[in-house]
Length: 113
Image (cartoon, rainbow, N blue to C red):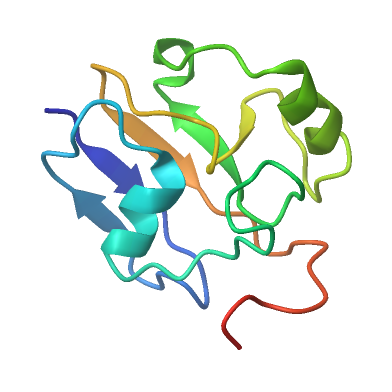
C-alpha cells in the first residue's frame, strides 16, 4: 500500500507527517482527516469548493485525471500550480504521494467550527 507524505503546514501539520499503508482507492481528503489533519472541506467533499486544495509534489501522474468540474474549481484556488488537485476528488493509486497543503484557502467559514 502506498505512503502519503504531507509536507509541513504551519497550523494543520507543523512537523509534516508520513502516513504509511494508505489503502488504494482512498480519497486524499479522507486519508488526511482520518489521521487528524483537519484540512478544510467546506462543501462536505462534494467537489463544490476549493477549500481542500492540495499540491501534489511527487506522484502526480499516478492519479486519475481531474474531471472538468474539478479543473473549473481549481482555477479559483489560492496558490494554484500545475500539480494542484482537490483532495476530495484525488484518489490514492498504487504509487507513493508527497503533498503540500497550501497556507491559505478562499474559505470564509470552516466546517465544524
